[in-house]
Image 1: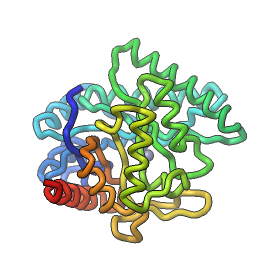
Image 2: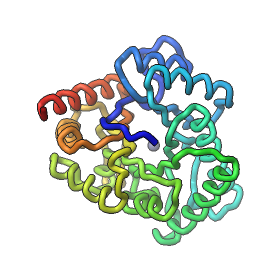
Image 3: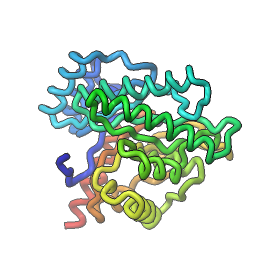
Length: 284
Ligand SMILES: [Zn+2]
């Protein structure tokens, strides 16, 4: 993999202002807006077939849009019900396959729910299901990183330390840092530049060069004591604040991709990109 030297920005899905409604339209629209990434939303099921994925991949490469995807929401890897577990593995497998054919690097998923399991039990079951998924992808020579997202609700399996551990123990898994979820779940405080630096120091200590190709979601969040309620646009209440984060990224030379899941997906992606570029210039 060629190492990126900077941070890419893009929307979660096809930009709202895009005239077309297909993924290919979305890729072109992102390029016109000056964005450099796009996450394909397979959240209600993977319907993209190989020829379509290949065509999208060719265009994305030409326009220098880095693609990723979000796997279906209907996933619970912490299930001991074999039908539910098999369906969860299939959703991740299908998302990874379409992403691979489109030349994308990573598919993001929410791991599941603790239900009545202890945290340790939930971890073991999720790990077993991920190893099985990895095995199937390897057999078919499908190369796609499985991105375990840091989740937003306290009832969900997938806190920061849990996804770091999954990434350490499973070759194909890497964390997807949803910064707003870390705040909503009280997994990690993110208020100042120093807080963001502490988080990246932790990631580097535990996962080495992950900080040179990290994948994350950034937007603001509304939450209760149970965790995430809904996503908010940047500048609503600065939780978490994007400006110190952009400065920290620029000052330390980290590389990766930031996807905006704000209610105004592409506008906030552009806002972050502009702030990041301003901070890069200030540095010089
Ligand atoms: Zn997600």
